[in-house]
Length: 439
Image (cartoon, rainbow, N blue to C red; front, side):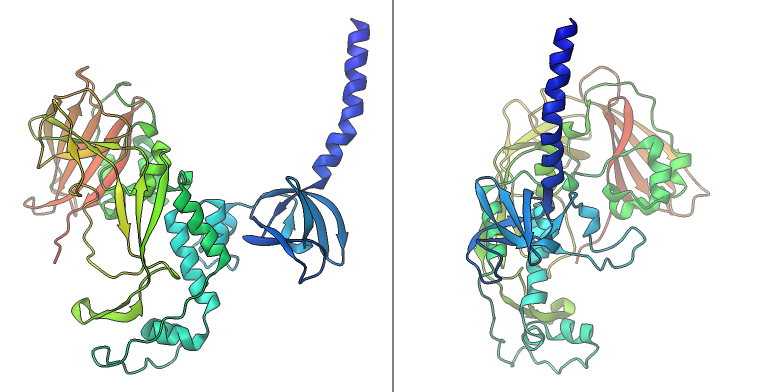
């Protein structure tokens, strides 16, 4: 026994310094798109490009250039673009926690830290800002850019003026971003829907963290203390990833269900102007990408719950068309009516659901129990009454969903839908939408 421990100790002593040396040499790329060059010269041949947080080994330093190794390659990068620790998303977000502008904001870095189509669009807008001359930007977005510079807004007659020439050229980093999304990615976890446990709702509301609730969050002021959800125990949904809320976007579905998202370019930027809605003339798009289609590589299943408890399940290969900086309608209905959904055999056709949600696989339950009750709040400033529908999907007499339909101060008009899910035996706010009139 003594000999075995002696050998082990000697082995650790032998390996220890080597491990320490490896840790001492470990560095992380700080730039979003850093050239690895063959030697320390600024114009040396480029071997490849490295993105932020790529792990490299530091081999030496020469005239503010550091020699590094990465995989089977060796080369030089500026020493200022190396860090001893990984960088985080929070360091480069546009706004700091207090709401002030972040001077370190970097859309390209954020893309490589957390790839998504939304981050791609932001990077494209960043390249528009940094790569074009002020004169060209003034031509492409005269009202917006003149206002930003504090200059008088030029007189514009879009119906008679010539469309300004579009200036675009290849940007290798942006091309690499597009190539990554064309090949397909699972969207970064930051895009998952924001769920809030009911016991934490009041604190989350005060801290302005009810991201999943949208404009309906304003109605929770005071309602949290007044409305008590039905007592529950664990039932159908065990974890957040078991369901996605109505109104969810394609990127949230990818992040939540871990399905791969791919991008297909459709068209380049286009000149946009119309006197309808008083749209300022500008080129839509993100750099050279005017519109594109996103698609998931796996179907999702939309579960619609009818007023009498009927359950309709629709299989859907999710697609979504994006037109960055296109100014259109403000109305958004989530994915309730896109084309391509197929009602699965044996389920009811539900055209006007009470509510709906998405899952990664179809649930077998074809009939739900809906129990309704009403709470009245005659002294509440903005809510007259609350229509609550507890929905039991799997027949165990424990509600799996609770739909709250909020009536406005006169009690005549529906003003918001709030949806809670029983996740692991805890009521969880997963969605909130105010009613709006679209014109």
